[in-house]
Length: 207
Image (tube, rainbow, N blue to C red; front, side, top):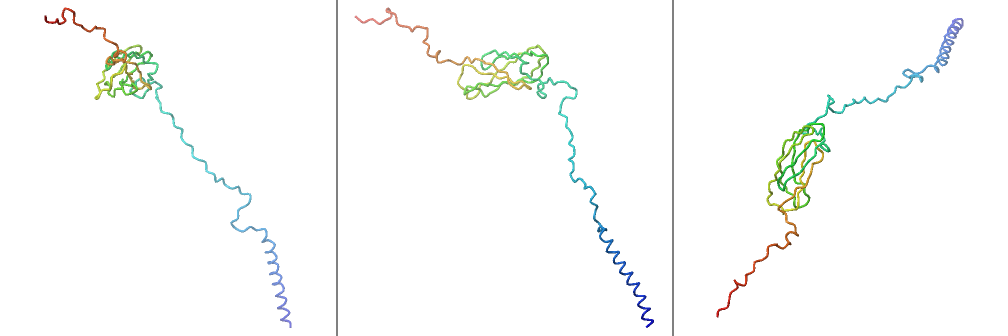
């Protein structure tokens, strides 16, 4: 019986120790967070990506700050209100006098065309010519249009267009066509009286 009592005395402390450890584990289990869980106080990272800044392109221009006066370059010389034309001649030829009324020199090319509306327009063109105009100077340009085949019927006047390189609108003027005959002119009777035989020239009857 003594050895049974001694065995019971040894089992009671072991049982109490096991129960104490179990209770201690239960009381501390509710406060621990599972591994890998982040704290609620952690601020979320901003996932929005800012677009890269686009480079600002400078508009193309003359780095020297000057102005192009060559009409054949890029249209830097606006001929509107700067070149005054004068038209002379009879179709299909004549002279166009260009006067530079600005304070800037002009160098370019002049092309000629018939801008007459309707069927009387000629499809041919006078050869282009180079133009060099200092400020305040004038230059005459001869023009001559080859006769088209077939040639349209003559009209009262043709509208001659002179286009200068670098200009927005052509210079134009009227050139009369001497070959044109108006209906009024064709219906006008001739001033020359018709010849009638004189009485002395009239045949006489034979006796």
